[in-house]
Length: 186
Image (cartoon, rainbow, N blue to C red; front, side, top):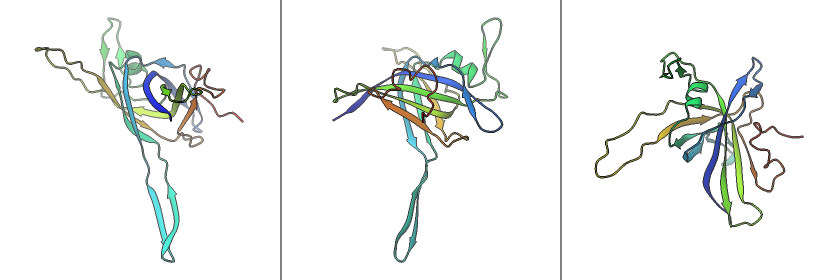
């Protein structure tokens, strides 16, 4: 019996697609303060009936969508991915004209219950994100901590339709997972 808990080591790498759809990625940057991640599969099941039976069934994989909750979205993410700008005085500006960029999102869960598997790492190859909401409230008899929620959409990559990759701690690629966005070996 395996159980999964403990989201950690959340990182992003900016995607640089070329005109053919092939993608290169920048270096991973940390997204410290990850509280939770909930991405639900996107796609429907198509069923075709003939001769009074289910003749054909296909499940469409259009990626995932959901949210990542952070203590606070990293300034580097706001600039690199969401198009915020920082001036010479250290002031961060958000423009309605900003163009968001695609990125890879990687991270890790802790596993327990199987002594040979202590973790599982993942990477979504083609993600977009929305701006986090601005939230907070006054301190009354106690403190309520506000968090940033990023709405994430993970789509199939244009060049090869890959959506995500994952590896358990006993996989050969596990140790080097965060060195660069993982590529499929032959």
